Length: 308
Length: 243
Image (tube, rainbow over all chains, first blue to last red; front, side, top):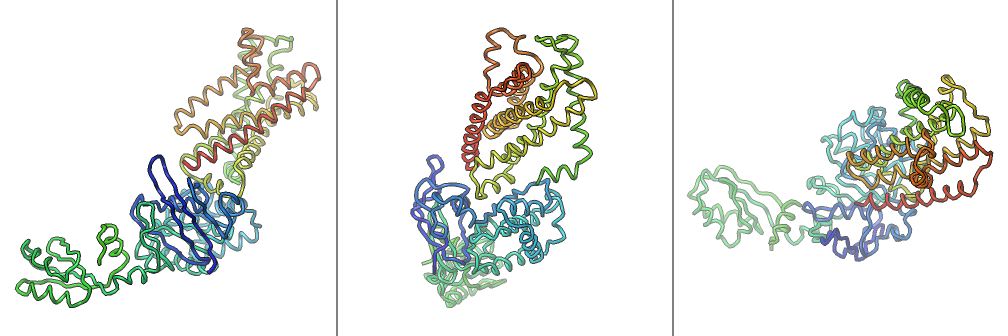
């Protein structure tokens, strides 16, 4: 598939600190790509480089094959950037904010009106369009910021926390819209809402210290840990001796405790029975088994130990 | 668009300000200074001589809030200006457009003030003189707009910005020849004040008013300077948005 975004050895420093270190990767046209990572990992810096808001110290960023540094005007027409924080004019109405951007990109009034109405309907906020920006909630403002970028029909959407501040219904509607746009637009976003990322991605880039730690679809990322399960056993009393005894079972991986809950990973379900057998004399209150998710993967990777 | 919205939604207060400002400026400056100065150095009654200078002052007062909001308030609060900066335009074109729109609005305020002043005093300006006055006013607002934008982009704290702005307005009021002629200063101060760029457009007008000669060379030179200043401000804007 043709590349929409290509980074070649892109680096960014702020003072002496390296924020991004020689990043090279490509993103296919029409794909939905999530970027995750701990705070200060360089995620927002990467989005700023992709949006043209900031420039790399070295390396090149290409949008649809055009070098962002050399073809600035052309590439900016291709990109829509939604920052994390609200940057709307507080004194204008939501619609005026959107139309202002439509004018900036020379979108004819009739087309802008059509797009505003269409997207506002999809996000269920048509009734707010005439409201003054500072009088509406942050979630509504975030939806406005998304439509403000969609009104000039960019090929690439760069989104920082696309559902930030939104209620459950708005989150669902926003993802429905983004998934509908996927295919015709390349969407790259940063989010800390891991449950949303699990449901909405073609590919996940896991960032750490300005580098890509993992890259792929969640299933692929979890492939090496596919057999793993996460277990929890709640005892009436989890003594230190019992905790030590259970932790020493060879098949138990990454044991942990929270009060009287014994938490661990295991390659197959038989590990669970090993633990039950070893603690057969103790009173157990609750048992829980679940497959690994993105959070478990990140937790283990950022702890630097992995699961295998 | 924002300006249109503000005019629509605050029509009464906006019109009120446009009419109150010239009245206030006239009463506080002219009615007192005419008793001190009496007449200009060339013998024109002060209240007639000062009218063009008051128009420049009113336009200056009208220009500042427009540029302050767009280049300082919205920038430090990270509103709109980032979105505008990411649009496919050169930064210098953005700066030029902002100055043009703000300058136009400030010139309209200046134009309205002529009608207000006509209610107080006799205005001895012919059509050609008014045309030259507004040409020089346009050039002046372009230079002053650049100055306001430069300080609004370089400074990040509101207290420092207001202190510097107060200094600039002191210079505008007293050091530009608007209400006090340069001849009242010492020869050294006169030489310094006459050569500071934002005082030159008014001198071009006064020279035309006195002699009928319009100094195209200096006018063009100052116009070129304001163009270079727009490019410099575009570069500052680009750097300030990144940090």
